[in-house]
Image (tube, rainbow, N blue to C red; front, side, top):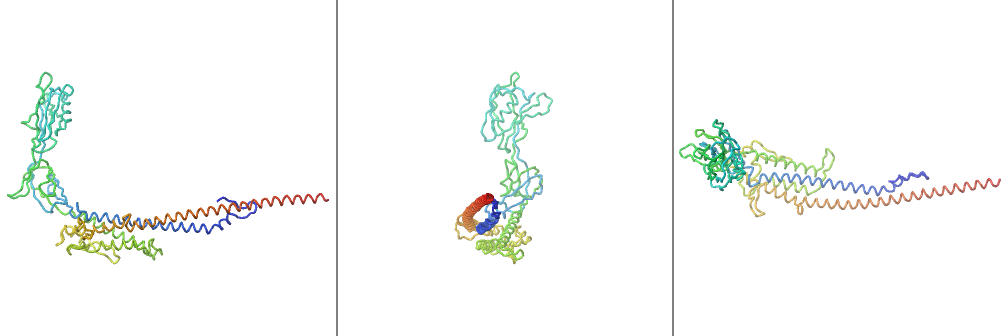
Length: 476
C-alpha cells in the first residue's frame, strides 16, 4: 500500500486505513483458511486413492489367471554342468531321471586349402541350401572372385549358413580354408551345395567342399527319461528340449550316456509369499491411514482431516469385508484367509503366521491344493455374471475399480465436489479482494484529498496572518 502518513496533519493514515479495512481483510483470510482446509482434504482423498490403487495391483497379482503366483516353479538339477532347466506354471511337481546320450550339433564342412585369404577363385555360380530351407545362389565374377570376397558373398545371401575363413596351421602352403556352419543344429539341417564354379585354371582355383568328411556332422540331441526298460527316448534337433517333460525346458550342456541326471520340480513359494505379505501390509496401511483421517487423536489434541466423513469409513468397511468374508462355493478347507495363517487382531489389523503360510504354499497341508489357493483369490474369474461369486483378489480389484471410477466412483464424486468448492471459493476470494482493493484506493484518495485541503487552508491562514501583520505596521 502507498504510504500517505500525514505530512501536513501528522495523522497516521496507514493505521487508520488498515483499521477501517480490517473486517474486509478478515473475511478474505477466513476464505483462504477454508480453501487450505479443502486442499488438505483433497490431498487426503488423493492419498487414499493412491493406497487403494496399490492394494488393487497386489490383488491383481494374486488373482491373475495366467502366470499365477501359486503355480510358480523352481527346478533343482543334480548335474548342473550337464543341463540347465527352467519350469513354467504348467509343470507338475515331481522328480525325473534323465540321461543325455548326445547333443545336437550343427553341420560343418570345410573347403580345400588356399595359400592366401585373397587367393583368386574361379567364376560362376554356387547354390547353397540348408535342410528344407530356401535355396540361395551366389554369383562369382571379376568383382568378387577373391577368397575373402567369396566368404562375404555367402554370408550376404543369408542361406542359413555362416561362412568363415580358418587357418588349419598346416605346412602345405595352403592353410586357408572356408568353413561352412549351418545356423541351426540337427540332422535335418544338413548343408547341400551345387557347385557350378568353373574348374581350376591358371591362378584361379575352384573351391571344393569335402562333404564325405565333414568337420562336424549334423546330429540330433538324444535324451532318455527314466532308468527302467520302458525308459522314453526323445530326439531333438535343438539342445533346447521342451517336449520331454510338460512345462519344463531342458537346455542340454554336455552328453554322457552313463551319467544319471536328476531333475526335481518344486513349488516356488516366494512369489506367493511376497504377494500375500504385500497384501497384508497394504491392507493394514490403508486401515491405519483412514483411522488417522477420521478419528480424534488425544495425544496431539488434533482431529483427523476427514473426521465425520462417511465416504472413507464406508470404503474402509467394504475393503475389510472384501478381505475377511468367505469365498462362496469354495470348499471350507480353503474359503477364507485364515487357512493361510492370516488372522485379525483387536485393532482390525491382519497378522501372518509365517510358518503356517509356508506349509500351505509348499503343499504340506492336507486338503489344500494349488487349485484351492487360486480359487481363494480368483474363484470364477472368467464368469460374465456380475453376481457370480468371486475370490478375494478379484472382488478387491473390482471394488477398488468402483471406488476410483472418475464418473461414478465414491472418490471420484468427492474429488469433483471438492474441486467445485475450490472454484467457488476462488471466485469469492477474487471478488472480496477486488472490493478490498477498491475500498483501500477510495480511502487513500480521501486522505490525500484531506491532506491537500488542510495544506491549502494552512497556506491561506499563513497568508492572512502575514497580511494582518502588515496592516498593523501601517497603522503605527
